[in-house]
Length: 573
Image 1 (cartoon, one colour):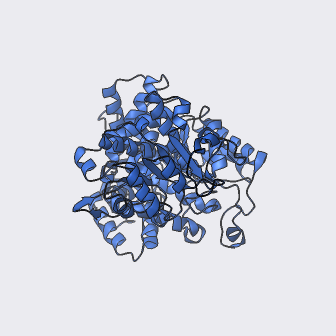
Image 2 (cartoon, rainbow, N blue to C red):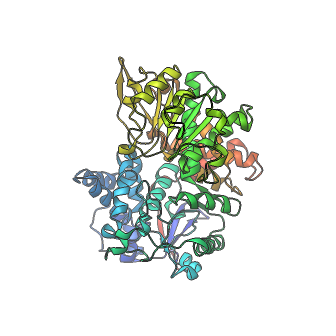
Image 3 (cartoon, one colour):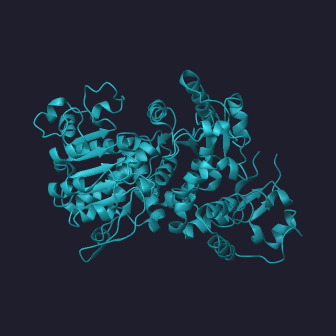
């Protein structure tokens, strides 16, 4: 049942919410609750007289009060619980607080603290958010969506909880990830919180710890697999198409063998994308574009080594390939410049355990015929970096210290400005630190990481490191796709977004070592990404026809700023 609707007064042009709740119900609805900000008139007309203290606070005063309470919390988990409680109590206040303190609070509402919260979610949950779809209620999917109290859902962040961050199968406790991603869509991208819905596809879990835990709240069965799983997914997607035909679906933290199938199966049928594949790859591509600008070089002049060809690695090499194709290289020429490794070492065409998405990046054995190798039966990362004369090294393996002194020193010998990108997170899983990358390359490396790191002082200068955070990409992609009314989300949109994001990095920032814009400018970055996506949709013939200036106006208007709208009482017909 809808709890409110967006309205415009035909006489004055005032925008307001027509509210269908009264009294205590209104105070317990997080999207509608204003706390002490309710005006005297609203208190009288909405059944709130006597239910609030006398004082009427401004939003700024409520933010100051909340920030003081937040900073009293003793540890990150308590700070996460405080913010989650605020989100469940007063969403407008939560988003204003988050936006004004994003750099401080981002590690709390998302990685790394959200990982700890997901491991404990059944024990710390105070109020469920979003919707949970499981085998016992999938037959009522239309009713589930009718139960959503939001006026118009335009974005769904969906997980089945099988590959939560680097933590594996957390079942229904993985819902913390869609909740966190929705928060970032609003804070960074500017989508209205009333348009965003977190979804858990609770198809069971194979995590024995959860199955044995009497406090676990999820569907207490082994995971659906095979035909039963895909039938479940199909019923869910059809339900989305019936209830929210214009909405974007973001697939989030699925196991890799399912993630690739989901992306290919549904990208032409519904407006959808996979952030772990496409968003990660596009953000890394933006950092590489900046690095090439600093080097005064082209992608086609580089030799790329990518350690870890899962979802993130695949997304990265796909975007590298697109740029190389734009520079005129053939598929064979591209393969001679991109060397991919996974757990078995360098990937070869005759490897019987290759996944389908890995095969285009496997090398013929002839490539290594004249290489000097420690063990011809397994080509290691050190072998590839040395023999291929790598100039760009990217890691998405979650193997701490994989880029050791030998490998980093070799990168420094291979190129005057080697690009080194240890993208695994959290921080403890990074393949190397920026300090190590700079120390072993004589301070010459261009570095971007997956986790936040402090400033490095090297050879009398201060070097800052950009974090290749998907936050730079997914909120703007969702916003741009929705505003342009795109028929689908394409790989070309992500490449266009990467180019626009890289172009935001100033010469002064490049001189400090940054390969991506400042995180405090994330709203501006999201707007630029959204603009690139919308214009690419238009130019590809799959988005609405509008001029560049019109799109700029539409996108700026679409970015919601957290404020308390005026309320008027309404009655559901």
